[in-house]
Length: 132
Image (cartoon, rainbow, N blue to C red; front, side, top):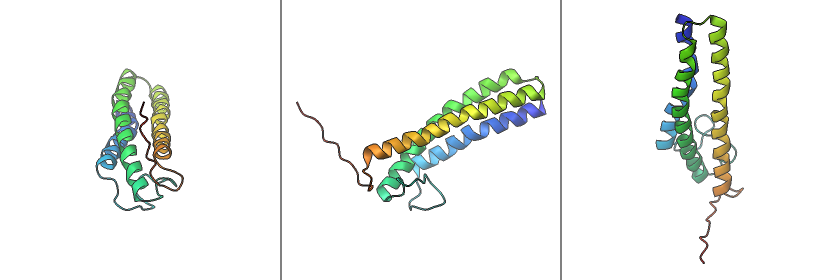
């Protein structure tokens, strides 16, 4: 049972981290562009506008994915209670691999939104409403 608890905690690290950082970034994006903390890509660091947009957007997506992964992780790990260590390990490792999909999707979605809302120089693209 001790190993199962250990694996459950390890498997919950990513969803809990996503929830925590997602909540933080969506509400309190780092005020200044910096190379250490925040959503740091070439596009997000163009200027203050892209920086705040990227951190807020990434935070919202990260938060949602974290809350989706949290119960899924528990539900997937529950049937492994009482099983042998190799089985628990395999299920736990597969689960961690699957958790990487929304993590990577968060990055792709944020970059897509950045490129949709800003030009290559980091200036906001104002989309005109089409009138009939």
